[in-house]
Length: 254
Image (cartoon, rainbow, N blue to C red):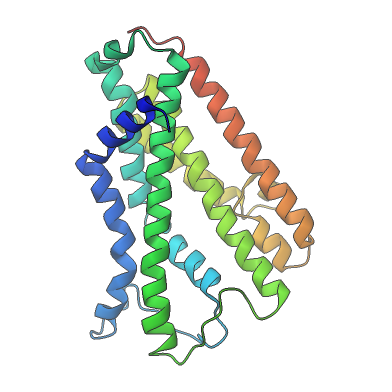
């Protein structure tokens, strides 16, 4: 990690919004509270005997992401790093540094923050999986599914969530170069809703990373084809968003 990346990431960690974002990873632990009350919020029901950890992790991540609040916060963080610093003239401090390096340090910081978020969700999911699924519901520990199709289904689900989240962060970064925080947040939410909507429309669903798990599940695609197309689609989105971000950032005056 370069010195610039370290400085930007450490400055990012000082933002209170980052800690709010990471606090969402503790939501799975509320399962213990819901078990002692009558509320249905975050209550897990069903047969857990065949649930593997990867599938449980994907389910947990999907529930948290589905609340939209984490997306709002990470979009806000992106806005403070781009729009906020551009608007306040803070980027002038980087005037002697290559613009691409400055931009990359900010993108790297956002992605590393997301990486910490994923790790913490995994840890909280592991706690719930062990103490709730195994100890309280009589499940057995299994990292992957007992049969290949179950494992494939879990892998595609988790990869789809990773992909859509990463692209959404880059979308937020793109919007924050030119627009205010409000527009950035709304634009990011619109993108996520759009991906969710087209994943349910025949023909258009191939454009959403969230679709390939179900395309495999219903037998429209083999796992290999689903995996390849999912990764390819995510790469296309990431490269396109990154390229557009670079073009916009290189034109910013500071």
